[in-house]
Image 1 (spheres, helix red, strand yellow):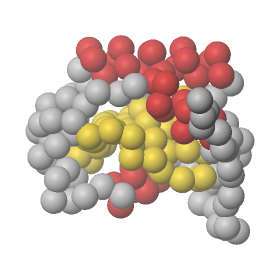
Image 2 (tube, one colour):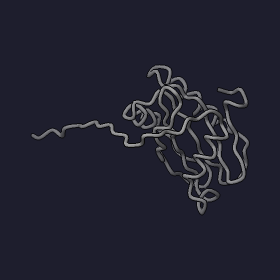
Image 3 (cartoon, one colour):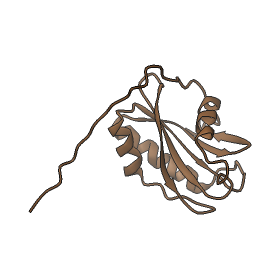
Image 4 (cartoon, one colour):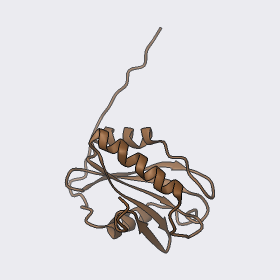
Length: 144
């Protein structure tokens, strides 16, 4: 019986990193990575990975869903963060409807991720709801 070997690697050739200092910077960066043709069609969930000084390590497109929801697996969120040696993350998803109103499911998911992050010493710094015309920041609204 053969057992597969698991390999973990970390490389970063990016010498100069963008430092996130506010939610608008996060929004602008994340929006630039969204497909403008599907942002009003299909929900997606992305993770912005940060080092200990809030410099961007990368953006991971975690999941795509339907027109009104996306399934987010906390294990996958943090497996990516751990592999990148991230100290903090900002999570984001879009609302195809264009509404910036948060749902109960959005609040529950945010709290679940925050709690998991506390156990792993990875701060969930913000959760953004994104539309092509604006954003809602859980942190700016005092919900984080």
